[in-house]
Length: 302
Image 1 (cartoon, one colour):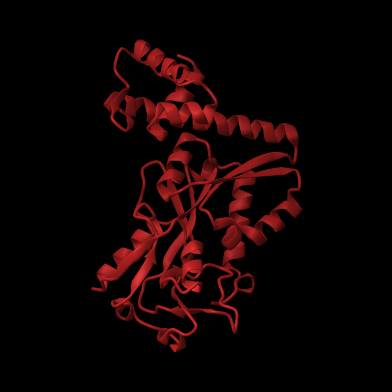
Image 2 (tube, one colour):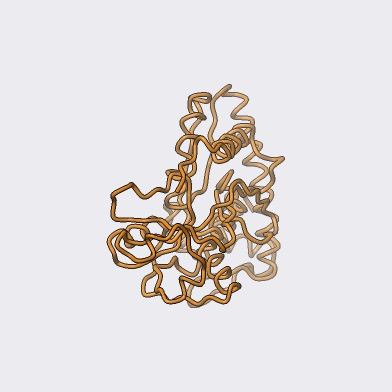
């Protein structure tokens, strides 16, 4: 049993696919399978269950996955901290984000951080969902992940940074565009451009509407809020989006953003394995982003 065996096994459990990990690691599927088989021989039990659409860990596999991920993560953090000591001001911070996170939440913070830590490498990895961010944190491939804050997740610590109100994006000629604000009930007759079901922010919006007794239809699903905004600007639908920092509708432009006052705000912020285990550089970057989001002077109004 080698460290490489365990790294590959944890990656397979996270991805649910031998072939996917083979592509990610630039190895053959047979080589990836051999790592798993070696672990199964040494433990004497099956660690993966083959299914039509991939693999999942068996009960024994989950035990090994959790222990291996914890140990590998701790070892990687220790090695990186040792590297930082050796490099002085050098080092890296690995951040998991959504498609538009850097532009909306981190642009100013990145500039400020790089001025203070010019030798530090910032590595940004785009994940398709909050769940994928959690998986990457548990696998030790990320230091921080910017996520929609949700229910507690075993092995993950979440820290809210900012609460985002919701706005309805409509064309300027739409009757709702002239309103200073609307309620959720005004959305009942609309068909909205929505995020896919695996989006936690989209799920939070659906839950809030359901809680208020409002049902809305949908003809279109998109991968991110920026695409939904673009479709609204083109007159191809309405969309309800969180009022992220910097979101604005230029005067005289085709788009209007109308606050939806009775929807609970969307909490977003950082997720990590353990705050106390973060490297000083990762903690400094997280604090820089939080401070930028909290400073009203750095946030444009909707």
